[in-house]
Image (cartoon, rainbow, N blue to C red; front, top):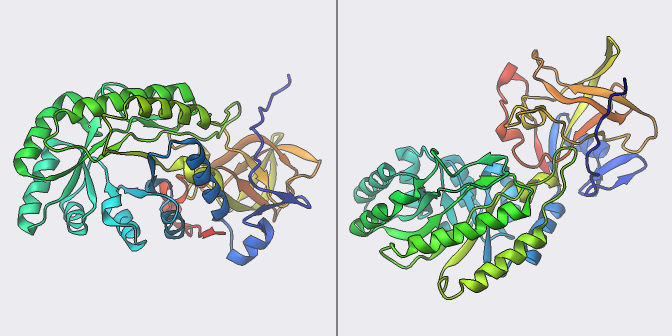
Length: 411
């Protein structure tokens, strides 16, 4: 029986010279020497800049770009992006500190999340950032803190619409959700905001993430704009900002193709032209994380051992699940699929083999690649996991088995 091993779409963003992968103009071998250890993450600042430029090219000029820091909160990455985007979205007090340290104006930083504690809310109020309120109870807590502190807080209402972003990797709206206020409850909440006199900025409507289907995103944009304009009719003040979410996906697995950004942008132009009068004076925000940084990053680990077990080749490395949970298939995958992987110092050698790449942890879950075709590797070679710029280190159980945390570099 022949076992078919489906191939990923080619990774074109990183050049290869003399069989060695380069990132940021540096060979992965030289970079490993510079970092001084493996495993490590590396992010290419030029690729991040090019992704922002691509978004500016295809999206309407009226659209403001916000970076969702949860995708990659490395301070150097966030600092680099501050000069390229219009705002930052954070999801914790720790992320808030990183954002404020960059010098991004506080009123261009928004804070979302269904479980903000009183310390986080107080810090946000004091800093003057925009709090995305996720429930009526949170509204009352914010108002109580505001009275105690003598500060009028800036707020938006996060809305849980009655529709979802179809075909998204993670659905965050439609039906019963922990995120946001059900759309039918928002008018009453707006009345209460008017009674309390909070500084209402607008609405935050985020439906889902990791979507590669332009038509699904187009439909969500149309419904989101309609909902935002409808809710604005109940607002006690003119709406200054409407955050229509993100959801733009990147290809990870065999058979996936890049999002048609031109189609998404063209549809937005049509929608904004149609609603120009109703949107006068309103900032339209798209909030992206993964789409901005995922393809600009790699994870690099070293082969410690190579073994044959009942006919199957295993490359045992010093990296794994504790650093890169997503690549092991344990971060939202229903059926495990391989991220694109190569041997960084042998990227174009003709001799290949079918191998599984595993880490050093005492669990069968520590599997970076399962029976994938790779350049033939030996002990000491460098395994590179692509599409690793988002939801990598900080989305992983770094304390598991107390291995050292992988360093990160921006090159």
